[in-house]
Image 1 (cartoon, rainbow, N blue to C red):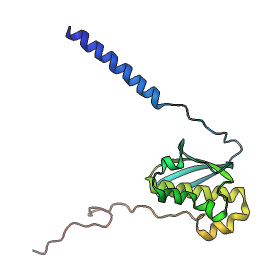
Image 2: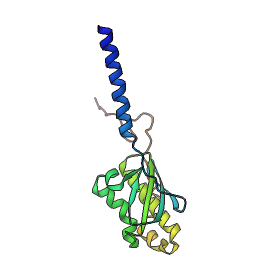
Image 3: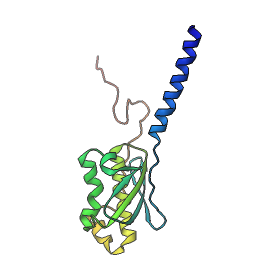
Image 4: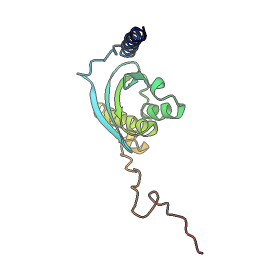
Length: 161
């Protein structure tokens, strides 16, 4: 009797697991990226592959809307900066694939990628984007931990006596 219950519960667990994964893996509509302008943006440890195409101003990051992926208003503002400076808020759609780092670094990488893609698409925007500092790659990264220290610069506590 106990064995029958075990096999029955194993079967229900397997069935429940398959239904959960089936629900998570909904097909994502991928836009046609053949005629898009491509650029790579980097910030800290994050790398963003950005595709810019004519559209209505929709921004998609890793298959989600930008407001859904970057929930903090500050990060959404960072991504929208290149469009605000160039007055192109509703001219282009963006599809970005980001990996590595945290959300702040990823937002900076997407901003850098969008700026580079805008410059490729419309070279006359280069002066505006350059003056705003969006085309320069922010090279600041985390300093490595050093030998004999707890962290990069944090030393062990000194005791005089």
